[in-house]
Image (tube, rainbow, N blue to C red; front, side, top):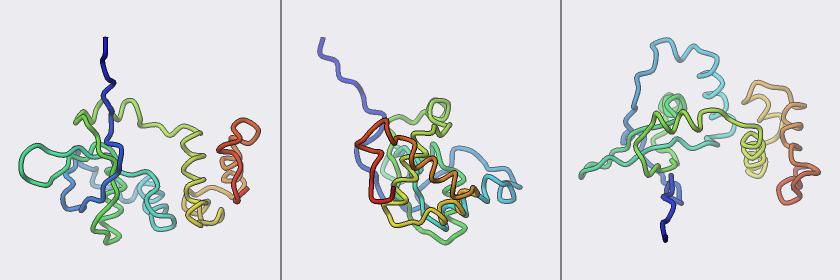
Amino acid sequence: MNERVKLGFEPDTREIAISEILPTRVLAPNIKSSPKYTAIAASIKEVGVIEPPVVYPMKGGARQYLLLDGHLRIEALKDSGERSVLCLISTDDEAYTYNQKVNRLVPIQEHFMIMKALERGVSEDRIARALCVNVKNIREKRNLLRGICRKFAFSAHL
């Protein structure tokens, strides 16, 4: 049997105009006053988009994409005047399945996101402000793999 595993995402991200991204759900009218939206907007302002929105290319001639994950990020980007965003391209249009499987950020993902921001030159203080946590919390997450995985645990930021 020579079956191949179907990739869930295209291997490369793609810069997409926000105007070409169609939401798959309507946001609540009061969402912009919620702590979650406020934190996302602050994070994007401080460090940019770390976790790209997930989209699915619509069939047909139009360059449009269904937004599977990242509705609040897209809304915050619109509010800040951004015109495009780097997106992860899904090979399946099943937003429900995607959100059920990937919706929670696990500690290792937090570690990698913090390390990525540090590699981009963002200070620990700035990351802490963006995430509404103290710097000690950022340092703990940064050091998550110390003594466990040498490849990822050590960098110039440690």
